[in-house]
Image 1 (cartoon, helix red, strand yellow):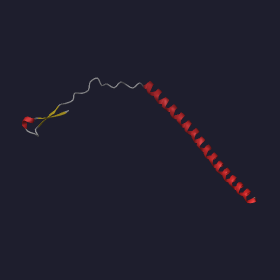
Image 2 (tube, rainbow, N blue to C red):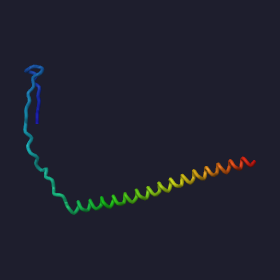
Image 3 (tube, rainbow, N blue to C red):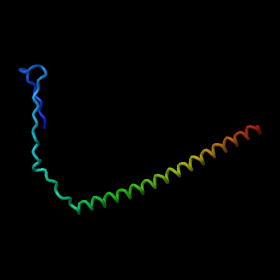
Image 4 (tube, rainbow, N blue to C red):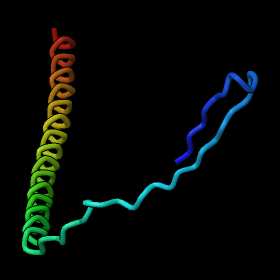
Length: 91
């Protein structure tokens, strides 16, 4: 650790720099990993990942179904306009 102090009595730019060593850490011991808990968490993560994949597949199915419905609706609207135009020509 570095400490810098100004010393007014020696002029405006006079400083003293002191270097102190930082003692090694105490009471900072990393406990061992609980392997049972670790495997439980990994299994839970894998299960959640599988659930997410299933949900995404279902969502994609709904998106495809919605796209088909929209295409069918556009086709029917065009057919309606076509039929309306034909009726107008007959009148």
